[in-house]
Length: 316
Picture 1 (tube, rainbow, N blue to C red):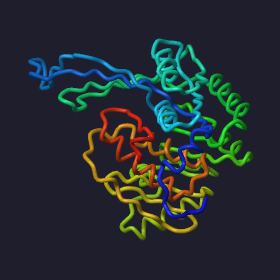
Picture 2: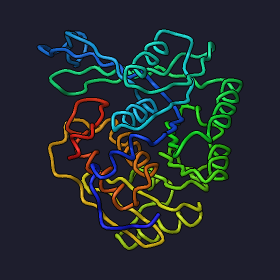
Picture 3: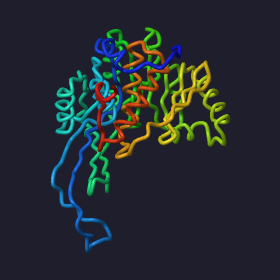
Picture 4: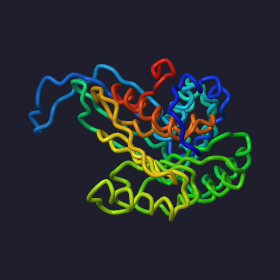
């Protein structure tokens, strides 16, 4: 992936519409309960929220898929859900977002649900419901991946640490053998399972857990490039919140400052970054342009409440 003069999303829009993106990973249903806070509970020093309305949105890898679809790409999602109401809701929500799905249903576990309680436009509480999927379902998901892989231009693997990517090393190897770029949003402190990926997109906390604390930009560059070489990556992109992004390739380091705008909610921003990056790399964009447009998309999505998407017109 060569770097060139940065280009705008509009220049890739026609190619993006033909780009076939495969997203695989841990999905969840994001539930939001919105209400008013008018008093503190007499039972404990906590606010009492009177719920006025609720919303449900695709989360995790499902949010990555809907972000890719919102940008105009032909998007397919492979994942695991429970044989339950949240799983069926996810299927309907993704269909409405024009995402093709291959959701393997595991009757032994519930679909992962994250319930957020919002009062006065602030998140007051989050409750998670989750269980790891069975090995049999994961094996069928891998077979589905291997069978359909050749149909796609790029693969995005979204690891939320919920057990849905137990075969991620095999998936990377299969895609690499076919010359298909693989982008990974990692989780945990062992990145060896992502060896051979095209691009890895950890945030700074995730990177620190793997390479240790750095003491200068030069020290960070050394640690990042060492990790990139060890894992055989073409690029390592570190998302650094208010510090923007840092991209490490054979050409060296590039630092992209954060977009200056009011931050409303950072949940799902990493999903938007890797979805935008994946769509553009699948459309054969140069890595420099892809990263800068992904940074622009992240700056837009943090101005929205909850997991959200960015549309092409917003990137104009």
